[in-house]
Length: 175
Image (cartoon, rainbow, N blue to C red; front, side):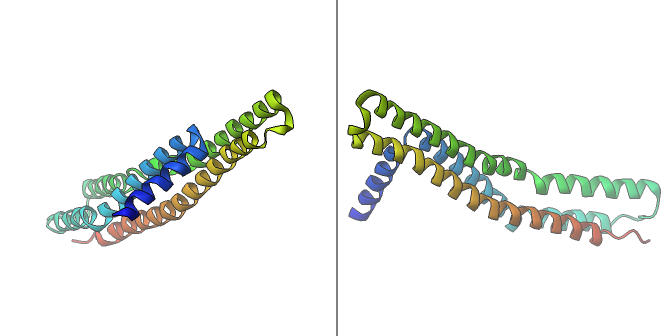
């Protein structure tokens, strides 16, 4: 149980070193990962059932060659595509937001360094070091969050496109 309290203390120390912007980056990364996990769970469970249901309903149609049937097929595929792609744009937004928040942390940390220089000159190394850590830690955290998000958003986009294409190919127009 001591490892848990040590881990919490280490996280608290890390968050205090990064300044207030690091908290915003942590929230953005947390929300991004909540959305990523939700999409992954969707692909593992709900999407398969939805695809199977659409396919079964289409196969039970008595006719599939008319203009009306073609329009219904396009509507069903479009709705499925919207459902499969839901949330991916928001994940991309969080991926883009992480480095921007890191840059904001860099700017605020450098302001702290300049304030330390202005008030005490170059003699107060401890105040300058705190500003430098506030400048570098949010930058690193923003980049790490963005890189992890880029990998998974690419995987999710590819999977969504593949599933929509598979549904399109499986809904035959014969009969």
